[in-house]
Length: 131
Image (cartoon, rainbow, N blue to C red; front, side, top):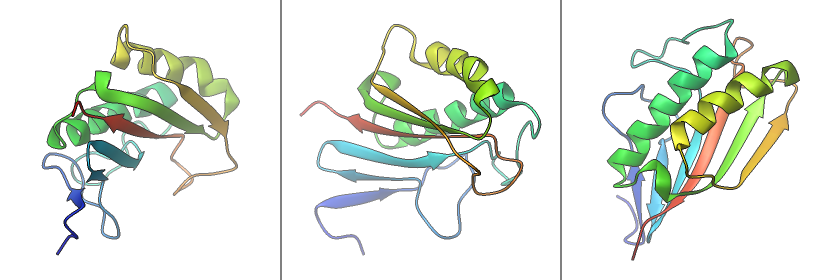
């Protein structure tokens, strides 16, 4: 049972991690766990294509946000993790397409690795709903 001050979010239509929930809503703030390019069955999409992975990542993010009652324009912070700096431009283009005219603050990090060797990009966000 969740304490009364937060709600765990586990959306339908995307893969269900075994060890965590996709997001938590605490008050009017939604914290979304890092999303990777897993399809509904948990299979990695586009293993050798960072832009293809980013498209799946943002598809998953949309599902999580919608389940929590939010839209992309509610996002107030984005963090992107990449394993290859050469992928930055392609992944940024997908991010900009997802957000349209909305430009939330963004931090991009180059890391030595992510959850599995084939994962090239992971994105986490924080969103705030109107009170």
